Image (cartoon, rainbow, N blue to C red; front, side):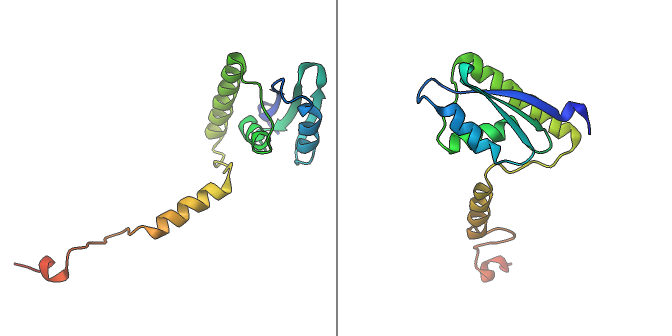
Amino acid sequence: MNPDLKKKREILFSKFPPGQVPEAADDLQHMEELSVEPKYEKRALDVAYNLQQHTLEELEEHLVDKGFHLDNTLMSKLTRALIHYVEDTQLHNLGVPEKLIKPSAQEAYVQAWEQRPHGDHDDTPPEWREYK
């Protein structure tokens, strides 16, 4: 396995509500191919994963969906944005197909597309199209 694909990241949590770290660690422990180590004094989790299995963005979105509050200081936001960009670029360069973060979103687009008329649909009556 490519050593560049092994990632070790830190997920920081906000001060409020307190007690998020043990709950978040317990939640992430159930995910496959993911190593989680709580850092209580830093209000953080150390996570280790293979980039082909998980991304930091996916893990953070999972936690936010579960109701956890991540640290939103400017430095944390910039760091996360840079890591998301680097991981996306690395996956793109490897040719890894894009993973759907929320499969229900794709289903909504598919259903909306099926409702719309598409193709060579023309509302013009046939007799007007044949008019010469």
